[in-house]
Amino acid sequence: MPQLHIINKAPGHTRFDACLAALQPGDSLLLIEDAVIACIDIQAHWPEQVNIMALEADLRARGITAPASNISPADYDRWVKLTMELPSQSW
Image 1 (cartoon, rainbow, N blue to C red):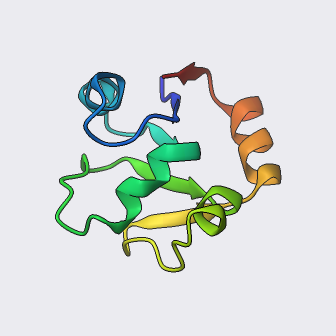
Image 2 (cartoon, rainbow, N blue to C red):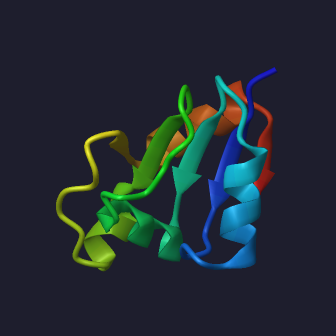
């Protein structure tokens, strides 16, 4: 069954790496807080067939105006809907 993975740690943190390793096809990944820094690394190797989103408020707070093309911005309403639709794992 697909899961929602929510990560707040920046790339390079052990939990960020563990989260990426746990992703399965069909899962969703929501980057929040310092994890949105990953949006500016266009060289990042994101898992295939995973819906990757970044919280808009955290993107703005860190001055990131355009996340990588495979990352969609998400607002708080979308976050709430996702947690109601999918089992969640916070990293």
